[in-house]
Length: 94
Image (cartoon, rainbow, N blue to C red):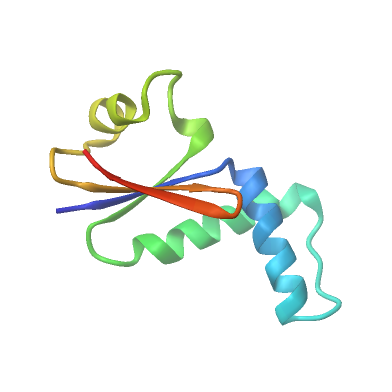
C-alpha cells in the first residue's frame, strides 16, 4: 500500500515552509522566487520514505483527484491519500 500526499502548489507550500524556517532560524528568509525550490526539498524529504509519493496541486489535471492520481500517478485501490490544505488535512483511500 502506498501513501500519496496531495500538496498545495509549490509556491504556497514553499511560502509556508519559508515562514516555518523564519521561526526556527530567526532572520533567515527566502525570496519568493525560491519558494518552489523549498517545496521541492520538502517533497524530496518525504519521498525518501518507502512507498510515499508527493503530488503538487499544479501537477494534477483538471479532473477529480482520485482519477488524476490513478491515471497519472499510479495510485491503486487501497492506497492512502492525504490531501493537505492550508491549516488542515483530509485523509481518504483510493
